[in-house]
Amino acid sequence: MSYSTQYIAQHLKETRENMGLSQRELSARAGVPQSHISKIESGNVDLRLSSLVAIARVLELELALIPRKYLSAVNSIVDGANSKTGGQPPRPAYSLDGEE
Image (cartoon, rainbow, N blue to C red):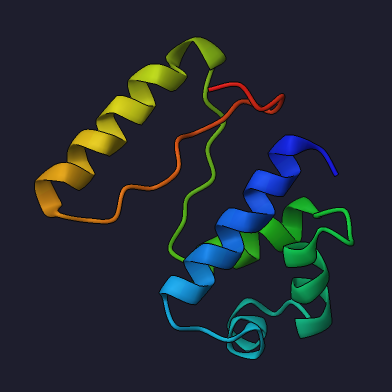
């Protein structure tokens, strides 16, 4: 599993746990089999885009393709928004090759 895939799988798992959802609850809401969610979170299956979109929506995450040259700006905006609202700082956005 590549670094970026590991990052995505771990972030999905952490977000699910922070929302207090079990894999079974996420499965029911996203329409993705619980066994597939387990494999995604453990890195034992290649994550399909359709599954990622369905899971992200339930976890109140948004997928976006950001030009690499703007990653620092996007991360700064997110960090600033979270510091103002007292929210948990998310992990920074990464490029597909794992660069910030």
